[in-house]
Length: 377
Image (cartoon, rainbow, N blue to C red; front, side, top):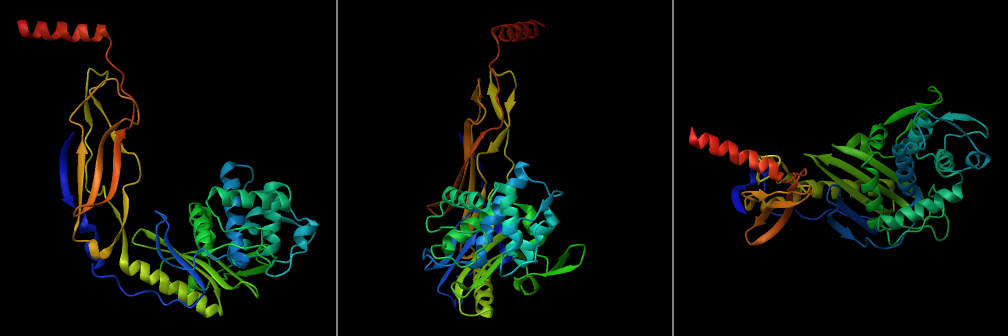
């Protein structure tokens, strides 16, 4: 193993004006959390594990399951959906679906994302799982898979129900997962739209769509039990943050708190590609059927760092000088290490991107003959 490169990667941060951590966010809500979406790192929190009503932020999980069904091909964007009696009886935010009405799947989806339509949420849940109760079971199962330890779903809308709750940390976790689906972003940044061929208007419940630079979503909620809630996401300079605010006393306070948290995150943190500017060489293979094996990173080389560290971060790449065949795909051949002084901030293995078999004896014999022949001449 040899070290072939050591360089300061802080150059990519210089445009961010590195300095000390800038204050703390102005929080006016009982429970909040700020997370970087790419890494899942929590940048700020207050009472983030407190179990609270979350109102229509519940629909983050509803939308996640719908998006996963879309990806799996069990539902289609061009599908028609017949509205059930149950879906037509929802109160609260709605697009006033009628029993037996046939709606385009896309209209139902965007009405949930933009206007938080309860009737559309139930119609989609029934489509995905066969019944609302089966869909709710899937919601709770998915919550467990995501490590949401302080969550229990009793419906797919967020309408008030004793025992229906979540936490700021859990909301951030499911919001992060939802943001992996690009179809959400298609609508979560839309301020106004319509369904039923323009007959019914939709207005986004997330006012940050109009006021916050880089906003990407995501979901608001309000009931008398939950207060004013929001899971707000925004992206700047390739870094996406999720600000969760639960239980604010007013709508203005939830958006102001979310914006302050996002500002805090963007002012003090940066997402850096530790591999930027680094050319990873192929590794020579001894007695291999191929001369070299290509190398790749085993995991993402993205690093979330405080901007105050910008001028201290260095990166070193260590790669094997050669490797003997056979070489299995995924075999470790080196590592990328990012440090701040003696502190290791990130370590990512370099692995073989493909397999290389060992030469057969016949191949070796032919090479030996060629070598001898050339030597004699």
